[in-house]
Image (cartoon, rainbow, N blue to C red):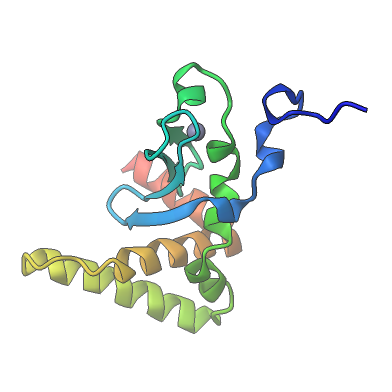
Length: 153
Ligand SMILES: [Zn+2]
């Protein structure tokens, strides 16, 4: 019997990985984008960076496969990685009041730091995006109405 080699498998490489193989880097409340990284196989010592637009679910990756227009496991799993982030899990357990308060506080902290020209603490944009994602999950219709109103304005 011949053992299957990792380089000749016919199945998508995302089956060889799990969301936890991606390492969270940062969240940007202004763009709604979160970044994750994973060690590069083609460039040892280097890291691939994968981005997820949390509003549109669009993904982007700088790995070799992605550069060649092929699907990569980073993009396939980044949404699941974001869904499993502790900040998202925390937000999913908030009551309606807690969700509103946490999102509002994080938004104010981001705005306050920028207004004062202080460094925005990384926990605040992360919390804000996690709360927004949870809000979108709970009230998809409300988000569509708000987006339509924004377009009409
Ligand atoms: Zn990739």
